[in-house]
Image (cartoon, rainbow, N blue to C red):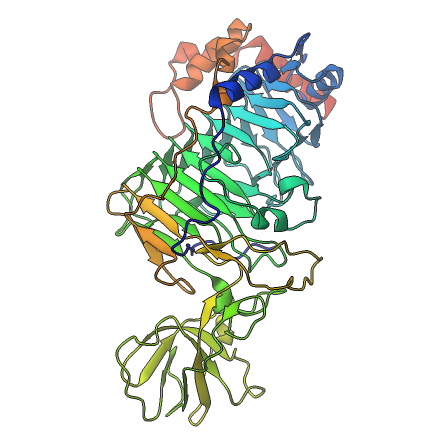
Length: 566
């Protein structure tokens, strides 16, 4: 499935319905979580090596609650590893246990979380091992399926992902990714979050159930990223930390983000899939080298950004908000052109007139007009003649106007279809009050059906839900196509909002893997690795490097992989 533009965002209107947090008894929740990780009778099963066959054999012997350890070494995996158990899969630490993704079709790891239990992945460094082509969502290179209602939870910690040739996909995962490093080189998405299975919806439900449910900001019902590092090595092009589809919900907090933006998809370019639903971003440090001005964007979700520190981004910096159906008829939803049944439209035709001459670029002069500057900004312009004689679309979003000219948007996905006028073409101005799933609106009745859904009764009954940002320095929302005043609130805390407990309860009482490994050689390798971080720091000394290179564990694993063909 192709993925379309990520660089524009969206926001919400002035009401707080459906956004207040769910309060949970945190101490009780934390205790229950720890119990889940320490089930009675849990055992440790040691894989003989880091080869895929040895790890798969160890997992086959494991039961829910067990820990499967992977020793130090480097192994290239060429087949999908499936996990359907609530286990801890534990390497010997970043720089020690290194798994290379050499899979050419399908995912590297495909993990379905077990109901009523917590699962954990820890202490492994993942690298590209020659995968071709790029493994985009919804499959990705590393894929986890969960549920927000069956008691499954997931923690991934103290791992590193180095320029994998594909996305990490987390579908309806409740839990936390912490103390993990994601290194990218700009371009494609590092992590894609989905909410497809929200409230027990079956696969192929497109995120409809998540969109019909409250956002519940400040609750545990999100995928959390905390105390992580997201680093873009590209010095020319900014990348994205995330993309988000099908009602996905996530939180990024207490992390470091370099030359990257936090992105989402809307209900438009992905087809039947709904857009992202709810996102919190707070207490992060954004650093950059002025290759982007955007720290976040949304084309569907309600955003809550607060208490972030931003430096090195180009002016502004901004959080962008947009709705692309205002300028392109994305199937199956069609255009937000003020006549579409999926949207809430004003019945009024606000102006009718005639093009005085052919349009120039994205500007048309209107005969006899005498308007106030920008009085039509945010309305929709429609060409009402020559409908079959031109390859262009017959509508667009109005950016601005002078006394007698209208400047409107390009159509984003296909510049050859930009709205055009010939002298004498008639035109009219209409207005969309709010479009399906656009920034600034949420909820609504449950949409059902396959790839050609029909609106439920009394549609569009979505409610206003503005995005909020505060305590982010000079950061401002940047409203774009389809976003109106009231869909966002700058420098305004969200009423009734309290962030979820930090650190996340899943992280408590469980030490990093390198502190629990029994492999002394592995520990020495990890110590050497820590001194040669990919984006700076001291390199290991000659003795340390030699010791790591000559590790018997390392050499054994490489040899097994070559012989066994794993």
